[in-house]
Length: 378
Figure 1 (spheres, one colour):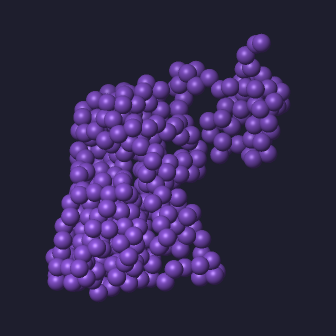
Figure 2 (cartoon, rainbow, N blue to C red; figure 1 turned 180 degrees about the vertical axis):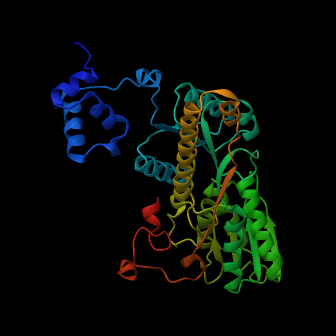
């Protein structure tokens, strides 16, 4: 069976070769009815665009790559959704790769994306950002969820410290005087949340603070164990609030407190602080901070597309100024650094005493705004 060519599509659709090319590469330049006709013709003939030929002809690859450390955390799911929706809005497709928390796989995937000549890449790094920058890969890259990056690198990160402080301030405003903080601050994001919690506690000075720096952030069984241990104390020694460095740990702590015969929140308030919707499965709605993943993916793609477009504009200028030192000088300009921060807000729920919401409570509320409709951002 002979391969269908782009000229066959143009002939069958009754349009020029340039119109088909624009429909594939610059759909915004083609009228919607013509674009629909071309798409129907492509489907009918089974035409498959030759990406290699397009790149050799000086075209662009309208594909972005996204490398994540795992796909088992709610934040990862949010990042994919936010990045995909924003990429499609700009006319890009998205390839998602999972490094399984392995820095070597992560570096391999970045090289793979560079070899595919994708337009740009986003990565939530396990490994050292400076190492990846030193590789000098010919692909625009935005780093997600990291604060400390080289000066000329591009990054988007949640304010992890603010995630911790906003939750701690809320718990203290609810009258907590004996606060237990649980979880291992074993990676930078959790360490920064821990610093945010500790800073808020230092300002408000409750009567007693316990720092129990144990409990895997992805292990609810550790939360059950710690919650049960704290709840089984004599009432005079029992904390009136538990702040966990992850929502998974907090959900486990709620179960542990209840298993020990105590009430959440009447006896002990419990809050998480990483905005992980996959952990919101307990019998008591969990107070935590807003999920950052969707905005992380969305703003990451926005920054990446903006960088790609600026580079294309600069290349166009260089083609016009193709002679002399002026072209050499412009060609060696360094890209400007861009670091964007996503600010959290509090999701106050029943685990710290807020009234549980029902469907009737949301009648007339606007949708698509995370304060009111978190689900639209997951």
